[in-house]
Length: 198
Image 1: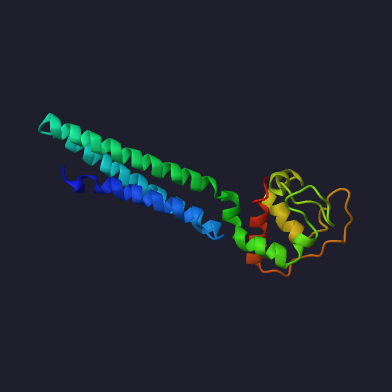
Image 2: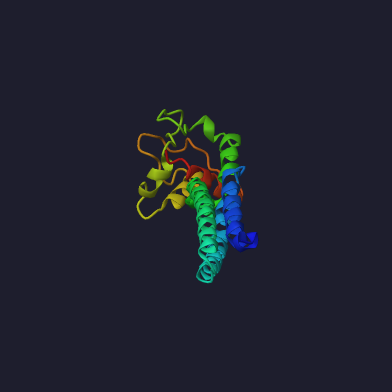
């Protein structure tokens, strides 16, 4: 059996593996990882479909039982490798917060959260009230906080117009507005807040 028969399937496997690594090894630019997975998904599917057709043709044209057995064994082995790669991609994709990635760079947003002093007033991991309300699980709560506002709208408004809605039990005029930040920075802050869902 020629090794080139399995080249398309192996190429697909390698591509799947690289996609998984792109997401797993990402240094904070989650949006890029999610985009790479989306852009390559169709390419991977096409490679596998083409390879599967080639293998089916070769099996149907096998001249003897020994060659047929060899083809089937090879197909099973490559199939297992592709399955492992697909599982790696599924894991990597599951680690990408798609909602956050579509808004901005959550990694940079986390840096801004510290550099702009947000961490000095808001806890993100406990229910402790520092100065302002805790932001633990804020991504889960933001959708339902203000009627007719989704999570992105609510969080953006909270950053740029903090007195537009004040969480019950807290006083207006305490949190400063960060409307002076660039649109990109605001998007990145919102993207970071959208990752606070645990």
